[in-house]
Length: 109
Length: 119
Image (cartoon, rainbow over all chains, first blue to last red; front, side, top):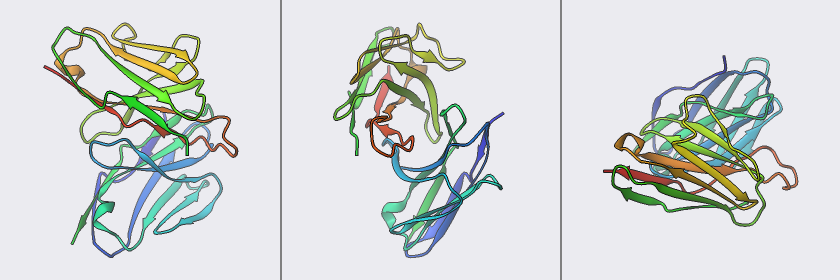
């Protein structure tokens, strides 16, 4: 079956750095997405990786290793507004998006 | 980026009534839209894939007679929850891809979501 694993919850301190990991086992691979979702709101796009390596976008970076079925989202200089759930999703060989359960990130002052 | 609008954002209805939720792509044409349901503190659950001009494709376990999907135009898909019951209370979200977008990565553009409460 298809499976995406990410931690259920993480806690970090304002101003610090946090890394949210995602491992996946899917039938084929056409890219990996990270979405941010604040409580009660729809997800918003953060990043897309299809090749191995690190993609940097401001305070957020996303890394992919296809051989390991592994990705992480790195958030730097954490702000209180970064408190949200972070969803990892993989586009499989049928271009279906397979979703992880999300990681709830709690930022403490 | 592409914009998807969903309406209503919140709806409260009595048990046994039907509720319609609209999903519109405002600045692009969407031949395919996706309907998700999300329970509190859970991830998105794909309910069905809505195809313009044809029948929707429902995921296993989703009752097609309960959740009616109509995709009558390239910019509008509707989800009707028929004979709603309290267990249908949830957050419903639609999304679409802009396939004509240069460099399309498969990114989904989401509507704002609709919170349904059935009394």
